[in-house]
Length: 286
Image 1 (tube, rainbow, N blue to C red):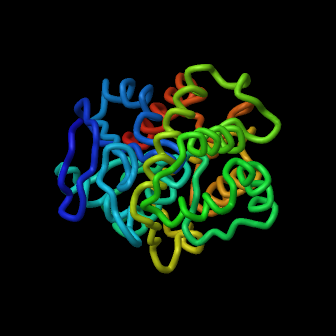
Image 2: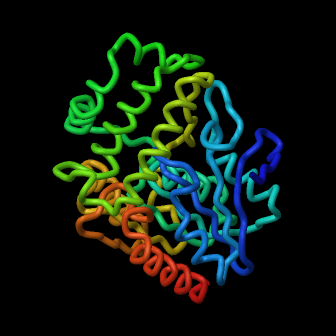
Image 3: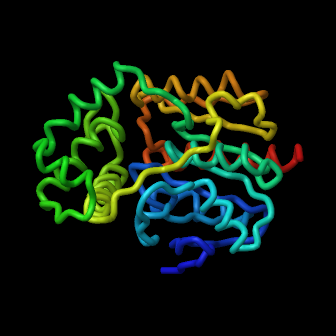
């Protein structure tokens, strides 16, 4: 597994291809394997990098707050990437936007897939739905110990939480695992099991976002931006995609029917074709 020292941490990453640089930022529910299809396809005409965020997958642990957008920029420095298109899913999209606002000269385009955004307050409807969907997976006492970090999680709790999160977020409300391609569901569960096993047994940590946060700065984003949302995703997550589509000047919105929170995994060919077309247009425009 390739590792790189960014000066502040060590990140696991993959790199392939030549041409304009593209960096893939995984969702909070996943790791860099969610980009398997895009990584292989885009490397035919781009220099493509995907990596595991600090504390996930093969990357180093961390304790306390961490600026993931800074890790991204440090990774680009370590790989001698001056400017790149950033493709971020879920919280990976939020970190990509924070990087674009922090260092606008380093980012040539943004593709935001079912994205989050720093500064966003989730409405009660979302927190209630999440609590109902995943709360029963692990008893409260054990869950409190796991959230504190450095625990020894019960594998049954890990599996139960992975299953609950996959049903709620990856599949989406009103859908079942049978609505996804089997390989997408299986990889989602594998990534989630490894995620919770690592998260609960590692030092407690949390992200540190830019200040002021991105939700009030969307009009300052001046690069070509593609916003992708799955129409079977959680409604409140779709609302964040709509905020980007309305707030970023010239943003293009791509809506994918019958698709949950991880379109690159659930609809790989369709998503990759749309992404490749967007990157080609963005490069031609620049």
